[in-house]
Image (cartoon, rainbow, N blue to C red):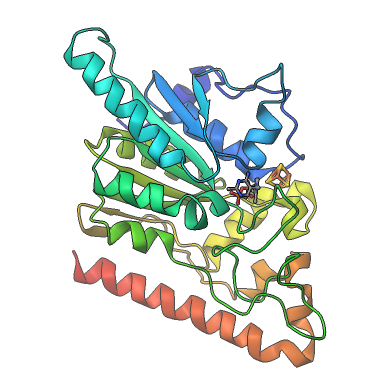
Amino acid sequence: MMPSIKELSREPELFSSGHRACTGCGEVLAVRQVLLAAIKPVACVMPTGCLEIVSTIYPHTAWQVPMFHSAFENAAATISGMEAAYRVLKRKGKITEDINFIAFGGDGGTYDIGFQALSGAVERRHRFLYVCLDNEAYMNTGIQRSSATPLGAHTTTSPAGKVKPGKLEWRKDIVEIMIAHDIPYAAQATVWNWNDLANKVRKALSINGPSFINVLVPCPLGWGYHSSQTITLSKLAVETCFWPLYECENHKYRLNYVPKEKLPVTEWLKLQDRFRHLFRPENKSLLDAFQEEVDRRWEQLNKKVKCFD
Ligand SMILES: Cc1ncc(C[n+]2csc(CCOP(=O)(O)OP(=O)(O)O)c2C)c(N)n1
Ligand code: SF4
């Protein structure tokens, strides 16, 4: 069932080149990987955000599958409506194909503004996969903090300077919140480990109900790094345990990758301009707090894996 690279290499690219994303954009890599792995046919929804702006500049489109652009706040409500209409048409025999529904939302459109639509759609048990493209800020409108932005990050609405040392709060744990909805499948992935992401997409789409995958998508512009380092940064997020690769399937947690040696989180932070100020002596306590929180969450996740085994 799980796709090999040989199998994926034979699949057509359903998100075509010629879009206008920055070089090294993690969002675009994630969409390509998800669409390659998905069982076709698929129909997609995408709210406002970088992905929409770079992929659908009229009269062009990078989407080679049906894609509905929803408002910022209602991607999950839109895909619920599409899925409900599909079920009715299928029951009446007007559609015979099995169609998979996928929504792609940025972290702003998922953790914050589209959250109530997502919560409602999951509670109603629509059959769809929601992929959050988490670049940890509202990138499209100029890098504002979202509830996915990590502690200490410099953004235009949490600027690091004399008044504040960047964002003062830790990020919201959206995967846990989805698990608390009793969702049958929720997972965390990156663009570095394509195999893991492809497996998760296949698994999510095989489930008769809602599923959620949170994909870390580095953003060269918003994070402040060279565009050649997108994969390095998504790998370091995992190797430092800032972004563990795990899934929760029917209440059972599973770690999909355990780093051979857990690297200090500074290895990930030091490559990004948004965290540069944390390395000044006066911000050492914030850097320590960051590491402590990563350690605490990693230990807690490991306990959940054991306890729900
Ligand atoms: C209700 C509403 N509020 C604000 C906006 C303006 N807006 C458009 S895109 C965007 C940021 C999107 O951020 P995110 O969802 O994280 O996606 P990213 O651009 O980072 O991929 C904002 C605030 C809007 N279109 N609709
Ligand atoms: S700003 Fe970031 S998310 Fe937006 S297109 Fe550029 S790299 Fe991608």
